[in-house]
Amino acid sequence: MSRKTTKLTRRRLLGVGSGWALAGLFGLPRSRPAAARSTEKPSLSPRGRSRVILIRDQRVLGKDGHPDAAILHEMLNRGLTELFEVPTSEAAWRRLIRPEDTVGVKSNAWDNLPTPPALEEAIRKEVLAVGVTADRFSVDDRGVRKNPVFKKATALINVRPMRTHHWSGLGTCLKNVIMFVPNPPDYHDDACAPLGALWQLPEIKGKVRLNILVMLTPQFHGVGPHGFSPRFTWPYQGLIIGTDPVAVDTTGARIITAKRLQFFDTERPFTPPPHHIQYADTRYGLGNADPERIDLVRLGWREDELI
Image (cartoon, rainbow, N blue to C red; front, side, top):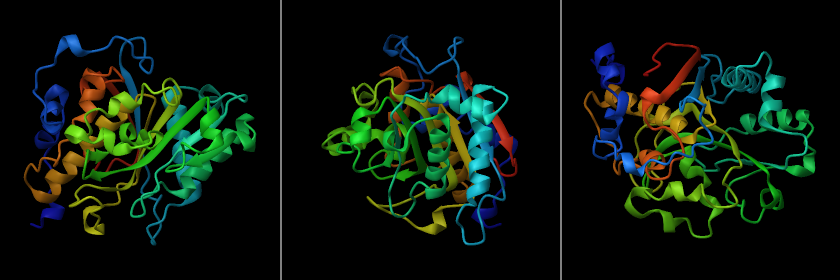
């Protein structure tokens, strides 16, 4: 049997990133340092849990590999409606954004796997429909520090594709805000363990209203600082959506881990380990990295879900 077609049994799948055992994936001790956790978690529900939406649609990618804009927009709106548990997408966007907001969409411009322009456009249409004027809306990545909209932003939407990463193990929503600092390598020590500190910067703290991890064609393996091969991507055709960046990234990490097990037919630890995700929980109190405290809602296509 080819490694690419190896089927994960239910038992093996449940063993991939389940419970606090995901600490093994993050390269940390499996015991939880109780004194390190912050009690201030504004992104969580009153029950101290995190709601995350996984939505997939087998029609979203065309034969050319590019997303269908209308289907992607529909996925986004359906995911938001379920996230906020409201009857319409209009109500969801009005829960998320106010007409008086200045909104920056922190995108990701990595050439090999950028945030899809169709998704950026869908967000733009919905934000303007709420009543935000065009001069108070911008999409940017590497220029956020000089962008006048981001300088005045009251609300940020954080959106990027999931991929393996040479410095942080995984390129995540938590890492996506690194362009807000003048020298990103300052946060590369210990496999980017200090990334959670970024979220305390005045440009970011309390402003990120939504995190979207793009899982249309995620990259599950790479070698080198900018390593990319289409062989190590696959058409998962999904989005992971939530207000808690830690829970969103944890969910993506579980899927990537399962794909690596499926492809290599053996456990293949990330190098380096993406322990910035767990540290964002235990050290910085930004959200939940424990799958047992994440309410995962699954919408749409379920085949080869890997979680």
